[in-house]
Image (cartoon, rainbow, N blue to C red; front, side, top):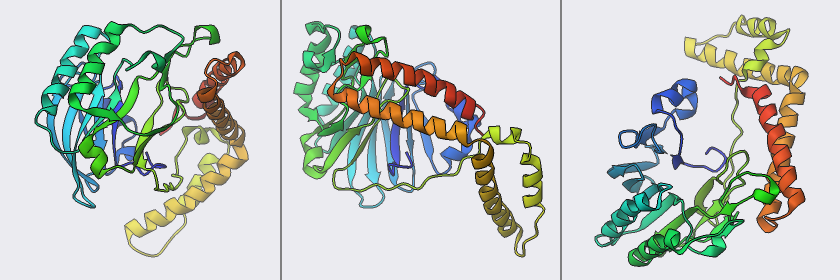
Length: 325
């Protein structure tokens, strides 16, 4: 979110109630508003999170498979409809979603964007390693045709989902997509969907951005609870906090926190750099392999390397920040 300058996003299949996640680390949600479809599906299949400083949102429709909204940018007052979709796995249950989209298309003459997981493909070439059926695709194809909607230009991975199985059992599908109507392309024609490497997920996260924009993010500071196990942790924290600064109470606290930030970074480098560096190296290696798999999705050696690295990375992450505060 931070590195790509995101101010509005959808999160699918959290299997958590909002309060559960908010209690874990409220700091990452500072300045954000949240809406979910928890009332329409147990656990909440779809979350919408946005910065009110960047977007004004009017929620128009909720159900178990979508959240539909009207959005206005605070910077240029442009308005557009956006539907975040998480379609059911069952063919028959998806028909309700297609019916909603077709109904709204009849009254929509404004830019309209579809984003999410459609749990089906549009054509057989969008699946590798398993067969598709006409029955699976035909309702989606008909809905897209009736709504006059089409895929946004995309970069990155073609297949947005994989079953993460062993090389000979691997299946890829293009389940996630970004689609817009003609009014969307008329007004936001420079937009592109970039599908990032999936990392340890089974789906690729993706961002919508101006193809000409250069997004530069600032690395945020995180506190890791593993630092508390260091032999000098309590001493260096106590020494830093006991220093005196002139000014208001808030100014003094800020000065102490800034001083402590540098001390903790030094502590991390001295005592925990191996875990952190190894995690970063494994994450980058996994990303590079997944990028290579975009062009060679059936490469047995690459698939096995991906499985092995993903296993190692999970262990490193648990060691590094399973107690992240």
